Structures are given as structure tokens and as C-alpha cells.
Image (tube, rainbow, N blue to C red; front, side, top):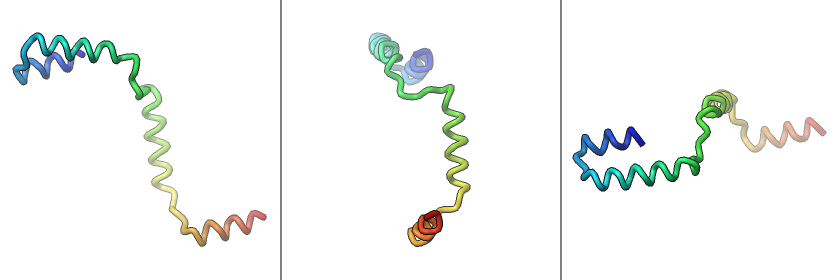
Length: 68
């Protein structure tokens, strides 16, 4: 909300409109979809997935058969 206020001032947005948008931001704070505390864990997991080589469909079937 404070960040929006600073941006609004810099962009010369009318004060009433800045207040309205700040109120909307404040009211929607509980609807946040991101959990900042778990963000790092998610990023690390994505990095690990990227490092693992992607196998072709044929190779996956061969692994599946080998497990049986």
C-alpha cells in the first residue's frame, strides 16, 4: 500500500484516486495468493527440476518396464 502511494505521487495521480486504490489494496491483503515464506523453497524446487534431464517417452517406458 505504501509502495502504491509513492508510485501514485511520482506519477502525479490525483490524491482521491490514490486513496481509493490504496483502500482496495488494503482490503485485498487477505486474498494474497503468494506465501512469501515458502517462495524460496518453491524456487529451489524449480531449480532442481530444471537440472534433472528430461527423458523421452521411449526412455520413460523403458524405465517403467524395468521396474516391473
